[in-house]
Length: 85
Image (cartoon, rainbow, N blue to C red; front, side):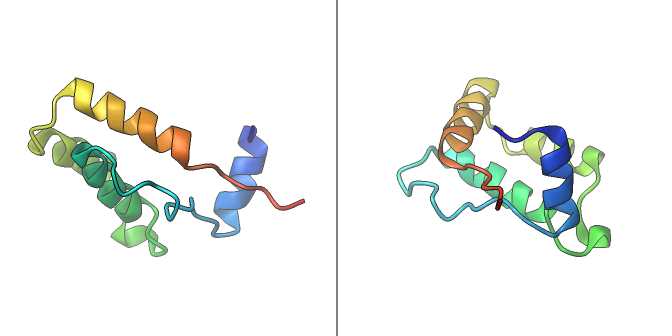
């Protein structure tokens, strides 16, 4: 498990989540989340969407809450943050 201090250090070092292990047979709703996540982790902070834009993008995708919760659960089970010793 990663504590908040380790997470902070990773972010400050420019580390990003490894999304390469996310299975191809994922729910379609997951693609919306992956795209948004990539935008939020953009190297240039000025290119990252605001929270308001994130909410708007998720709301406009016509995904129901159940699909999004399922997609988030699938992502969190497949994507792990690795902290180098």
